[in-house]
Length: 150
Image (cartoon, rainbow, N blue to C red):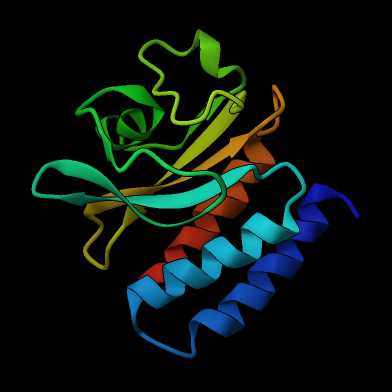
């Protein structure tokens, strides 16, 4: 199955599952569990949320995570500071990359916005392979994170 078709199926599944509760934490946990186990290259999948100016790990699947990310450093903070999705084909080429796990080779970060449009955190996905993420991932993951506060 191609990537587009897989995301379409996952989105439909998640749309149904996330409507069972209005709780954002439950929705994030469901999203992480589904996409982490259904997308082949997703090595680490999780959410970092802002809390009093810190970016703190919340729900995730994969190896042990960094609990608090150094402010305004790395890919996750770039997604917040630039208010956009960041695709990194090779994390070793990203200035200030934070290596929570040395096996991570590529990464995508999607800003998470609440009901008012304010950025409250990011969805962070890492892969053990270079060049794992593209615009298809960006478009579908952006749609998926909107389910958290819909």
